[in-house]
Image 1 (cartoon, protein in one colour):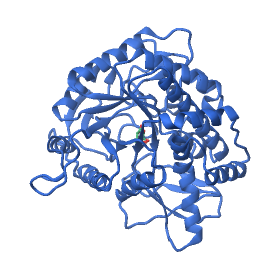
Image 2 (cartoon, helix red, strand yellow; image 1 turned 180 degrees about the vertical axis):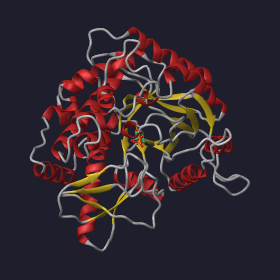
Image 3 (spheres, rainbow, N blue to C red; image 1 turned 90 degrees about the vertical axis):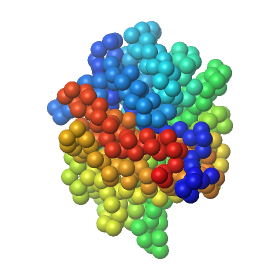
Image 4 (tube, rainbow, N blue to C red; image 1 turned 45 degrees about the vertical axis):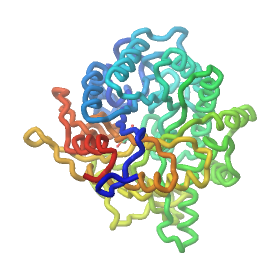
Length: 475
Ligand code: BGP
């Protein structure tokens, strides 16, 4: 379908959304009965940033949802903070203040006509469970299932659920790059084990959802990125891209949709785990649960920010994370996998994330081909970080507008070729706290003055409102 100017229109029920996550926006991190998460101590020890009050969403959600309505944003990603419901992860009784908070929040979503897409776990395992090994300790799987069951029963007003946000990013930051709490480096054995254990927890939540007869839909959000060989003619580069793909994408997608790890995923997983000095354990019950859950997975959320070009690499592990926005300081080389190629002709953000919109299209079309049982796809996060400046009450973020437009153009192309993409969520709705990067890495459609908590629409918010209203990218 095209509008009068020849620009294709998005389907009538396409969701033009924006995303948030509890720890990055709510504030009130240790009040109202909320239990501790690992980030609380980690950030305090680093002495860099505090996630309190972040964007003060705990108090200002009515304002943010009103902005959604006014700007035509009809879907919002929200996560429930597990430790607001069960302060220690697995308490006998839930925390009534936390339970009531999310009822109020969902009621406001409904009042403003904004559909909540709710994630159960967005990087914030309760500290009591984290301290005992997080998802490497299987007790976290049991506790997670209990928490998921509680939420499904407690919040029938929510019909769109995601079990986990970015299992890959969690393990990559905790066990490979070491840039998040735990801070272990190059432990690919632990990374694969934690991915598997979280996928078992996901499967058990999906099975519970099905068994409880919840009327909504459920899926998982994966952080995916296309891995291209730097030189497609080089067998070493092709192999590096393949290994990086299994690690980031294929291992998780196989089991999400097929309920079984493919032979090639297992070959890489076992080889890389043993190279790191460990081994991967999977029980028969795990494998049965993964197989049983896969057909009940209704949808996939894709968080897409960048793609990578891989080169063969036979040196030692060597990674450096750019948390400051000083361009050109990132380094990524993994023994047994490969290294990221520079590709200076491709633009990057100040944090060295490669801007490559076609990678999103290649990813979506590859999922359609390789895992045709994918259900529905939502682009659950996509957006561009910048050091936005408020000048005379305005933020002119033309680069962000270009970034979002280019990615939406490729989404349209995937739609035209038959991919079932149902919606798109800009990361982020308003400026939020950015994990180990703090507050100068801004993604929001709405600028947040973190001193006054005032929200100011950026140019991108005005532009996105027009797209949502016209349901097309053209004028
Ligand atoms: C995704 C996370 C978000 C968000 C975003 C940007 O991985 O789901 O929580 O933070 O990336 O990442 P960052 O804040 O590190 O720039």
